[in-house]
Each structure stands twice: as structure tokens, then as C-alpha cells.
Length: 391
Ligand SMILES: *Cc1c(COP(=O)(O)O)cnc(C)c1O
Image 1 (spheres, rainbow, N blue to C red):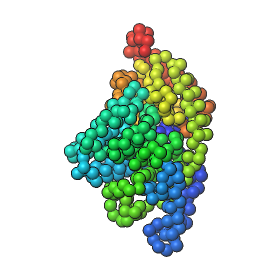
Image 2: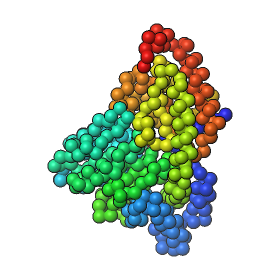
Image 3: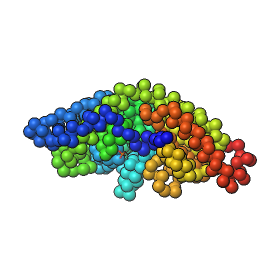
Image 4: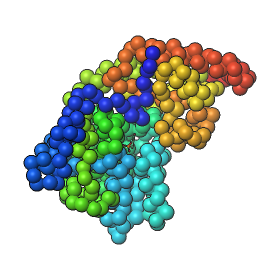
């Protein structure tokens, strides 16, 4: 059996999405900036995708900027605000558990003389609106806080944070890459000034994303050149991918409640099954979490060994974020919620999708139980300490 439980890293493109994209390779292949009929056909596809994204977010079409992914959207928002408001202030507020697209942007700005507050999170990975409020200074120009965490699935109190930012006149950006298509989002009701999303996290294509920027806020473009995206992002649009993203966000949003119900039921079955293994814990918030995320620490074994054994049994999972899997440093997110290096190292992330079946979940629980037993039987640390440790 081949089981894909790494949907936070990327998802499969839905067949309906592929179908919608295909004509834009060999039929409507004009450049959307051209005035002839080929160009106008392409422009129509671009406009429709923009309308679909706007509808999914409760935004206006004029507020949607297509980018080459979530990373570029995050960079555009953070560097754009920093550059534009440098004379007003150089203080930025974020959290300790952001995606590297946000963290590394902030770290780069620190090198350039900006001050960044990395808010600590609680044991579940949450920050409060109160923490944000207390961190705002006279020179704060931006608050950037993720909607939902990509490793542990914790959902942040975004509407409350948005309200605090509005009250204090500070711009609010949220990296909603993991939340879009899973959680209802309305940028107006939540007082979000800027929002990043990425096509390949909700069954759309890779290399395409969106930055929503509230009307009235004009950011300098990160990529300069032609006048595409009303001069907010230069370069000929990746039309097939944009059309695919539009279709994918429309489908995901229409099915959000139905899918959340179905996927979270399977996720809960998975979590329940895995927590019957001795010396395990669930990471992230028990209820305020993404419907598709299970992150479990399994003590006395290495996450990397579990991943290898899972892979040998046809199961794809992750030990944290895709970026940290290649290195030996434990995940910054797991350390921020208070795990020791040892416990963080023995953590696995399993992320489901609407294509996940109960059969796959039950198989995964079985394999993980057996794998854990086998690895622990070989572990001298387990044999010495587990019996005298109730954690
Ligand atoms: C995947 C991801 C990104 C990066 O998006 P890309 O489209 O892969 O560049 C940014 N933030 C979060 C939370 C993510 O999960």
C-alpha cells in the first residue's frame, strides 16, 4: 500500500484542476498583456482566477497579486512594508514559530538595522492578541503572524490579533499558506491587511501563490520589470498555474466544511490510535488545530528512523517541516513549545487530505506500532530509562 501523509509539504493536483489548466498550454497560450484575441483569451482566464481567489477570501479582485508561491508572497509583504515605512519606524512583531519564509526575511531585516520581536508561544504553539498588544511600540510598522502552523497545526487567534492591529494602526500580515482551503477566512472581518497563500498546499499547482494586499495600501514590488499585476509584481504571468490555483481555491472553499468534518474524523482516529503507544504525546493544540494535522512525539526513538521505516512500508510522513528534515537541528517550532531536543527528535508529522482513507489510517497506526516496538527493542536508552519514567 502507498500512503501519502505529507500534505503539509505538498498536495496532489486535483484532476479537475489539471483539466482546467491544460487549454492554457496549447490553446489559450497568448500573453495576457497582448491586445490581440490570443492575449484577450489569456486575460480572461487570468481575470477569472483573480475573481475566484477574491471570492474565497472575501476580498476585491483588485486586491489580489499573483506571485510565484507562498515564499515570494511572504517576502513581498515583509520587505515591501519594511522598505516603504522605514522612515516611520523599524520595529516588526512576529512569532518564534513562523515558516522560514517569514523568519529568514525578518532575520535579514535585522541585519539591515530593523528590530524584530519574536513572540514566544505557549505549550500548544499559540500567541495571544494581548501579547501582540503589549509588544506594539511607537515605531512598530508590521505585525506578521501565521494563520496556522505548518508543523504542529495550531491555529492562531487571527481575528483578535487583527482587531488589536487595527486599533493601534499597525499593518497586519498573515502567512495563511496552511489555512487556506481548510479554514474559513474573511480578510475584511478579520482585519487582515496582507495575506499569503500558495497553490500547491490545496491541490493546486506548485510555483504559484497569492499576496492579498488591502486596497489603499501600495507596496513597492519585490520583482521589477514590466507592468504586470498593475505594477505590483513584474514578469509574464504563469497563466496555466494561475488558472489552476483559481480552480483549486474555488473547489477547496466550496467543500471546506464537508472536508474538514471528514478529514478531522480520520485525523482523530489516527491520533487516538497512536497515543495508545506508550510514551507518546500530541504536539500542538488539542482543538484549535488544522483538521488535517497530527504531530506526535514518540519517546526513545529517532524521528528519522521512524520515517525510513514508514517509507519502507509505503507511508510518506515528515519529521517536522520539509526544510528541517534534511538537517540534524531539531525543529524550531517543537523547541518553542518547550520540548527537549531528545523529545523533539522523536517527532513525526502526519498530514492528511481529502484523498486519505480509513484503511490507510488503520494501516499507518499498525505500522507505527510495530515500528516503534522494533526500534525500542534495539534501543539501550529505552531499556534503561523507559521503565522508570512515566512521561
Ligand atoms: C509551504 C509554506 C510556505 C511556502 O510556500 P511555497 O509556495 O512552497 O513557497 C510558506 N509558509 C507556510 C506556512 C508553508 O506551509
